[in-house]
Image 1 (cartoon, rainbow, N blue to C red):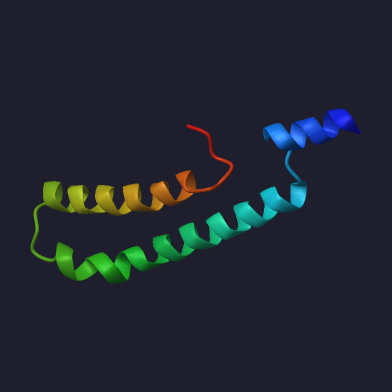
Image 2 (image 1 turned 45 degrees about the horizontal axis):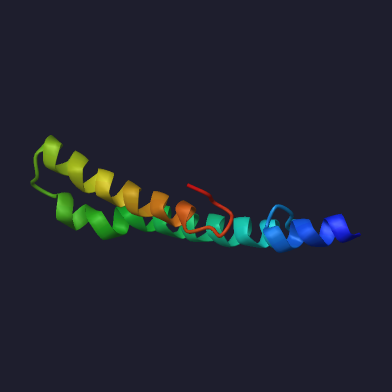
Length: 76
């Protein structure tokens, strides 16, 4: 029991429910951001070159990926 308490205290052990809750929250945010990309960026992309469009879309995808790194269980 002491070993388990120490692992919890050190952060090397976390409850499954906490991980599931965080993963669910993160997945929901990622899904919402991905689904809004067409609506948010379609007007901005009209009349732009392919290279400009790629840059805008890369920025949008990077924004979504940052959400994954905001999960409390992601260690960089």
